[in-house]
Image (tube, rainbow, N blue to C red; front, side):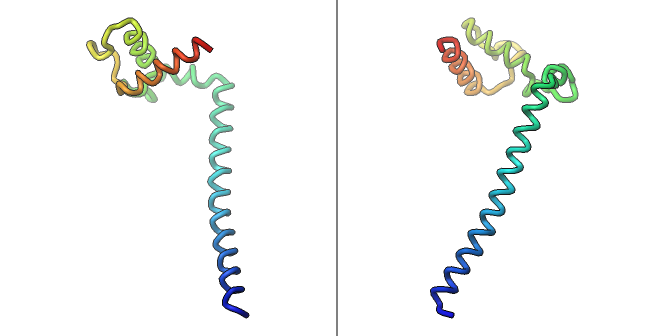
Length: 103
């Protein structure tokens, strides 16, 4: 065996191991996306939106919508105790909402 042939075989083994790890990662991602899509189609998001066990002031979708409404109305969403979301998140979602309205 020549040294060049050994290097080629080692490279092939490393490539197979790396591909196997990344392939498993992509399968896991696809399963996760598929499961979330299935739960969305089943209407689970509306049911879980109201459960207090899963919502906090930082994760509440209702408070996020209220913060966006206040921001669009020219009122500071942080003046009261209704919005606890990061300011950059509100500004980003506001811009996305404007783009989707014009499209």
